[in-house]
Image 1 (cartoon, rainbow, N blue to C red):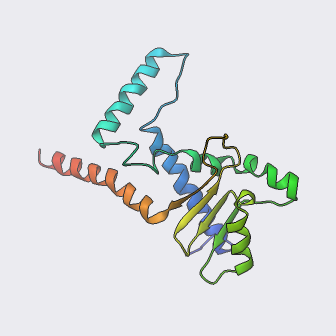
Image 2: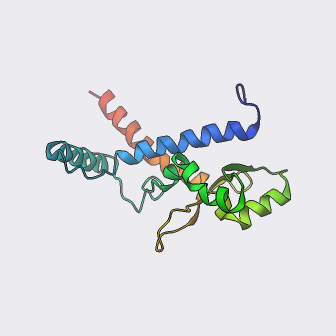
Length: 171
């Protein structure tokens, strides 16, 4: 199972990082950043996004996890988010995994001091735990993503693709 990885934590880190990186790419299909330099390109992106939203019946309410790019950004810029931990506590923060048979002291440290652990995988409760040290005053700093909810949310666009493939086969 682990192949090229030295331990289970490296294994999980690689695949969870990849998952949220790809969720960020999916997010890009439904959201666009303003581009003031090229209005033609901006208009084409806007049309593409509107088509994707329509074709996948995408709403932020129905796709709450896919609508949120903060988890991907926390992972992508983890070193920046660890500055507080490194400077104030001389710790390294980063990624941890909570296993069923894990060290109870580690679990308590991670869950009671989330500000020092911006990104963790909880296999017991099937959640990815995030702490956004760069959140603004009104933003949510601490949040979890339920892996089973994410799986269900990803099945919706998959069903749209399958439905379309079935439609095309009929021609």
